[in-house]
Amino acid sequence: MKLAAHPIGLGALILQIGVGCACDGQRFDDDPAKPPVDAGADTMPPPADAGDDVEAGLPTPDASPPPGWHRWPFPPNDCTIFVPDDLGTVEPLPWEPCPYQPDGCTRAGAPWAQANGWAYASGIMGATIGGDTFFLIARQAADQWWESLYFKNDVLIGSWRWKTWGNGGLCNASGPVLFAGKANMVLIRAQAESSPWLFSTSPGQIFADPGTPQVFGPPDSALLPGGHGFQTSKIALLREYYGGFVVRDLTTGAFQRPQPGSMPYVQLTPATPVEDRSFYGAWTGALNSVWVHSMASGSQPLLKDDFHSYDRFETDGTDFVWIRSSGHLGGQQFETVELWTAPVAFTAATLQPKMLLTLPVAGPANLAVGEGWVAARLDEGDTRLYRLSDGLEKRLPVVDGVAWSGGQFEGLAIAGGQVFVQTYTIGGAGNDPPFITRFDIDKLPTP
Image (cartoon, rainbow, N blue to C red; front, side, top):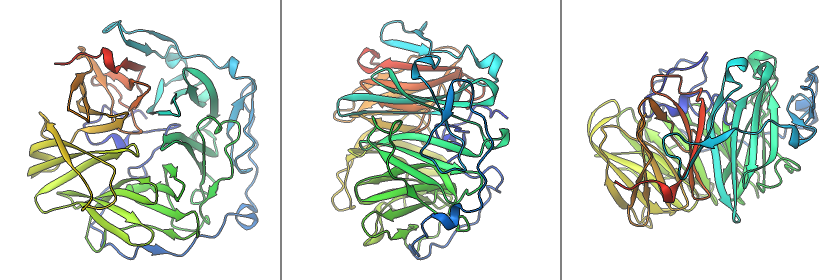
């Protein structure tokens, strides 16, 4: 089922098969109405390694790869992830000049969509790492296969195919998420859903040699993988449903599920790691606060007071961006909505916040950050970029009937001096964009 175009703030509930699966929001078989949670202890017992005991008894799927593809050999035996025999045989993306901005803009359509039933999955990953630009896009292939396309400097260097569980697949591949110099791929397993695997390695190696995985579990634990995972040199972080997450210390193996102290909350918002810290939000039903967690000291407030809501907190590992709102009108509506930034900091005392501007909206805008820019999606047809150093504004063109998607690790990414954005028709299915558009930032107009 395709979802209708989503309002600002619900990007986390968009179906993200391939790039992220149905992730970071609620499980679709759950009741979204959840009472406030009283935060408990940070620490959980270390999980058992998913070794022979966990894997025993899981049948090897009797799945045939599509012609010209073979099984990717690195996942567990119960996974059905396939890769091409020859990357040169993978159908390229049909890039063409944009009709609405021919200079500094290209877009890729989806001529296969009518025959295959879907165009692109929700979500774009992109980052410039070591001078190279990597990006990932997922699309629908023939016969209900989902296909991820992974590029380095516009050259295809990886591709994966799998089927969703409802179509006979037994393993979903999420990502790779490109973050902090690494490519991170989560495998969510139909026969052992609470024992996901996380591969994390250099972006150029994830396809040919993803390295030794972090294995979570065991299958009877409470772990519910939400699709996105990350690994720094210090910790591994796996997002769960309802914004929850788990953290593993890579040195000691200690395992924690962070909570915002003793503060009651309705839902956590997605976490992202930087070095040995994890940054996440906690929503009370009225206001959101931002917290920083370490394995040694637990969770401490980074952005929190009784008068403001701190929403859409995002980081690329170098900079923070967030929305600060005041004058709560109910729901996610406020009298004043501001865009803020700061260099990465690990405590409230060392944070150096700077307001960029007041946004002309009543609710928090979805954000993406990278390369010294923040992209803010104000509504379907209005996405603006702001340079973090001085607030210089650039705007995506406003095109009649055209909507731009938005959100970090969702439909918006900044990489290689470009902004990548999923593009759909206003009023259409926001999780089935018929185009991927990329703009050169220096060619975008200023107001």
